[in-house]
Length: 362
Ligand SMILES: Cc1cc2nc3c(=O)[nH]c(=O)nc-3n(C[C@H](O)[C@H](O)[C@H](O)COP(=O)(O)OP(=O)(O)OC[C@H]3O[C@@H](n4cnc5c(N)ncnc54)[C@H](O)[C@@H]3O)c2cc1C
Image (cartoon, rainbow, N blue to C red; front, top):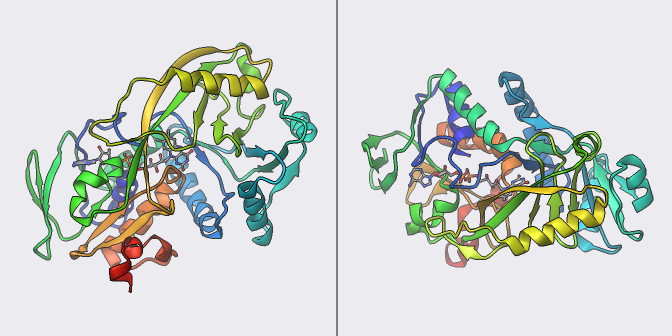
């Protein structure tokens, strides 16, 4: 979110400065690795609208980058008949007149030959979906931000923020920075960086695993979409180079960004392995690697975006609840709007910071 905001500020001509505690490209937050799902299908129409608004921004960034950032592979969701989440999501897409196809297990296998879903599965497919090469996306935003004149301080830790003046003062490991406006988007470090707000955030440990299919050509984008089992919350990506990735979207153990245990849970790896083999029976793959990441989850899984209650020149962005990356260029644009203009045209009322604070909301 920070890299996207930096880019959108810089392209407006703002003298923008980005501060990152680790080396650029690090794997200690929530935006590293090779893939994140982009999808327009959601159970809440707000996110369908925001996902659509993010597409041209991704396409623009993709065209500016030397690398392929986004691949529209389509997304196949499936579940046992009657699954509420899938039914509601299909209902929302139909009500909004957005393209969504409902498929039987046989129809899914005819379209994607490696897939063998259980016979009574209800599946739906959206073509406005695919994968984002997450690590490269962050680098692309930063590269474009610098091209527009932004300054980036990496390996510089924010230790304290003085909010008492109109112009906030940031105390960092490399000295003080005074700024007119400040955007704080600390990902899973939000409970520490924004301690004074006592935001209701739960940081969870999530792990993802990569496998190498025997016949790689059969599991590439085009042959296989991004796929997700809404009952188990397991999902997977076609192999576009780094191997076939699979992960569990269910919340992992609660942790903190400073203490997270990065030991790989081989029990989870084996569960995911079995799940993939159950729906891709010919895959015969070998294990490549795993990685640890964190979700920063709000009680309603909606994001937290808005002015800091103690200083309106400070904008907070946190709690992306394990589904924020697909929106990051749009969030960057919104954060730049809020910081530079004090308002945005996008509907972000649902993300207001005070919504869990019944006293201040009354
Ligand atoms: C395994 C996994 C799978 C996911 N899958 C998807 C998906 O398929 N689709 C999707 O849309 N989303 C997905 N997400 C969620 C998405 O990746 C996150 O919502 C998003 O990356 C969060 O970005 P962020 O900028 O808030 O946090 P981060 O990327 O962690 O950025 C915060 C940055 O702030 C820096 N920072 C923090 N404190 C300080 C400090 N004191 N001083 C200086 N710098 C500081 C950190 O070092 C970090 O670089 C997934 C997340 C995980 C973990």
